[in-house]
Image 1: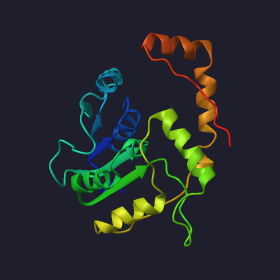
Image 2 (image 1 turned 180 degrees about the horizontal axis):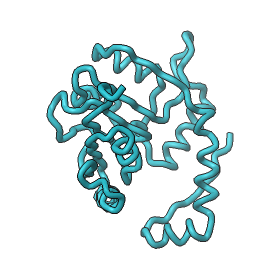
Image 3 (image 1 turned 30 degrees about the vertical axis):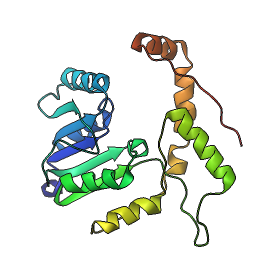
Image 4 (image 1 turned 180 degrees about the vertical axis):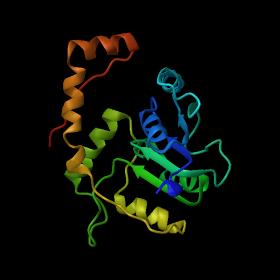
Length: 204
């Protein structure tokens, strides 16, 4: 329904802006992306300009935990694979809710550990050990579960909250990323970008 399409979108933790450009094209909307990285923001703006989207999409350096936007600003608040980087999950969620317009939509796609069972107070030791290794490898703060996110949104009186586990859908992605990075083209691209990535295996 064109009447229900978002007109104003924020991409929280936008990287180089792939989601923003896609959403701007899909909905014909204005999209603002924020990232902590000046390099990412610069690259995102350059790509938007090159693809003829400069009048729809823009990117800036800003903190997702202290967004530079007024309240009730966006019809769609989008965050893909940035929540896991947030050291303060409650504040992250509060900021997403604060900038969402009344009747708007918030979509968060993020890494989570499994939900705990009714009799569990924590992950199993082997699970926590594995999770710690992942966090160390990717410089990530403490994770939470999907149900933890649901509770955070419920505490802010949001309605129509839905959650899903996309593990099976995204599992093939990571081997593909590693394969692409280990090609000659991928390696030379890393050298040109000035970034060095060390791959390590995680075993139980």
